[in-house]
Length: 621
Image 1 (cartoon, rainbow, N blue to C red):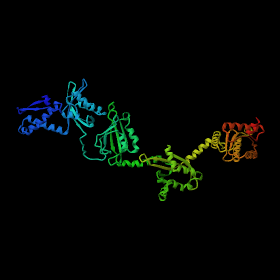
Image 2: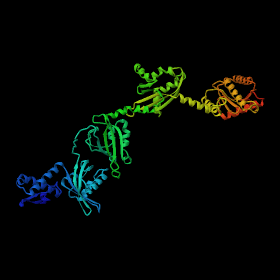
Image 3: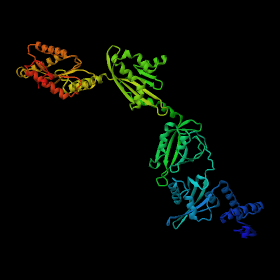
Image 4: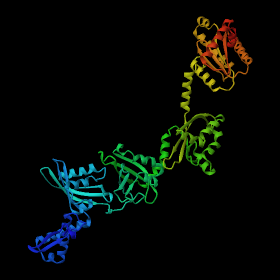
């Protein structure tokens, strides 16, 4: 028989209603390597053949009914491609085995001659990463015996690759710690799920394996651009094909990188290309399947379409940001599109600027320039215009200054001046990249006056109304720093009242205070408003005289000052003065103060009520 390639001849008796009808022989073709397949083939053939011969029509026996039921069940299973399986779990030895019918073996692409443990391992080891905990949980639930359990997962088919699978099973029995589970297995890749109702906003779902960079759609991919349910090279393939809006490319890559270290559930709103090749909003929901080593690199991703009104808050989001910045003290505002420079809206003192810009087709900066002379002092023109310059506003934004402020005095209708703060807040829309600005004025008059009063209190000597020691030093150092390379000659003067202690001792402190007040008043009348005058303490005063043209002019001014002191009232006033001239050499405040002090004491040594230049006593040393 071997010479005829007959290796598995099978002979089966045919019995119906207790009668032997004959024998049936079937050779084992080379394509069939399992007796299980042979037996299945014999059963199918006999059922059809006997039915044609009329045995089942005339027979009303229980056996005939069973054969008819078996025929129908087998045909249903064949048509629906349901594979039947039995899994046995020995909890004592933690051993798993599987028995399967011919369809199940065919679906698994496994040889029926393999042992139950080998068949189970063939199935289990091909479960896609990310589903092991899910499948183990399903089997544990079946072993509880309470209900039928259904699971869907992806499985690595030997020929088809990753395919979606549905398994349904239930506990059949348990004996001596061995649990028997029975159920069926069905590939879903050739099935189409029809929806009861069709909605455009039903979600899409796919799984992502970061190790393989693959995705597999569990839905029909009705929303997202493309047709393939399985893709490799994700997420880069979507980026290359333009499915991701350019703004979201970096964020999209981050979402699918190092997924094992990310939170269990994440949500993100992004723009994706839909079937109409238009970008639409989707809420991306990402969930981990499990935390085991095999599961933690796999995500389930659900794409929820967001209704069209999602765009409405997007367009208004910049206004929300702007109006959060506006406070109750706002007296005027305009909204500006920085792409074209046009005013979009306005209110308060600037409410008419919108109409003017529309009628004359003027940009916001042109409108403001038309009114600059009406509201801005001439000395503030340049700084005010710079703050309104479109290029300057954008430059500051890209340098990190989203909000800039400029304080100045604004003309009022009655000719007065009002302290105001101009605030420019810039917002760049994330999706389009367009830039907008809100410009508004805040009335800070009361606050500024309080600030000025506080600064004056902290900076000025309350008795003589000149700068105190610290403020005088600060202003002198600021001026000298700013005058670098100006080629100016300045003078540092130190002076005191001659015999002031005697006046205090004989006439009292009240008389002494009046004398100090009069001394400071004469100082302010003698020197220019631009010069800096201060009181160090007691009867010591300092003056910083700016930009002296010649020593002759300086001498004339000092002579005038001493003369005024002599002429003042019944009290004899005199002053010893020391002068340190300052040109372009390195400046040190303490050194200048000390040298002017030395010159002052030189004046006292010469008889008081006179002035001495430090340069003169320096030459005498």
